[in-house]
Image (cartoon, rainbow, N blue to C red; front, side, top):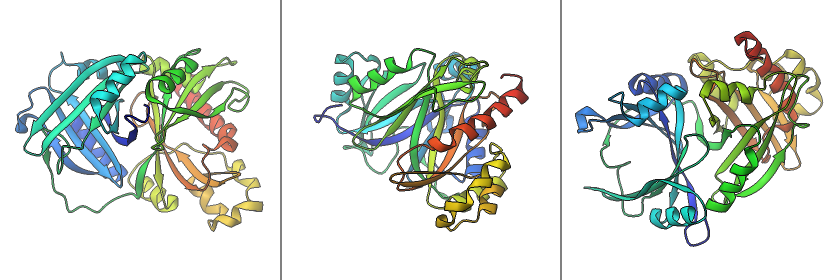
Length: 361
């Protein structure tokens, strides 16, 4: 997007799920989100039930179809639960849509004005990799509500996990398609390529991937991965097989206190990728600067990485559904703007163990 219609930031992510009511309960009880708005039969919507969940600056919309013929139901049949919409806030949805389409994007939802007592919400959407939509949202004439059709749900709950914001979004595409989609985001929406990891940086004895990191002026970060040739099936190819095509693999969720957040999540039942204890054998020399004992890092499975700008702490959940597709990363940054490149080897080994247990390596 050029200066005429800059992207202000990430507005929300919409999940298409098989049962929004149950999914909302899981994200509330296990991840510390609060349901703040709802739409469905009781509000007059005969097609979709949606729950708006919030924590910090994060907004998730969990949507289910009320009829098997609707697009959301078809998505769930094909992909299982998945993140289907990346909603970006812009100053003018119609201009953003026109610019993107003029530059080669395929339109999905033409510019639309949706009005209720809170004002006019303006939006439009384009198609990206797989079945993922990028939705442009203009809230400049809409206040005090999430969207028309939603009703607020008040909650006294303060049972949050300490998650603050979406750090980055990671999409998986098929082999040979990464550069095509990187160019698409650069050309149609004004993203810049910030860094590139090749199959030498992200590989093990058995598998590899390639990745490029995109960022725009609002600091919205989208990473695009593709599998690389290897002796066995990579985690990216496993995702593509079970998701039935490209899609969003994981979301990085930022916290200011990763220890507190991970303790909360584990106690709530969230399962994390197990990290080999040998990973922690060589951390003593510099990890002291973190004021977190290596023993505690090892107990919680937290990975550490450092670059010229600082360091970061991170760990990854196991897939949150039955298919080995969508998962979450928990991340705490202290200056570092990277993605844990020093941890790629250990992370891949851990992922391959899980793949082998599923019979997919």
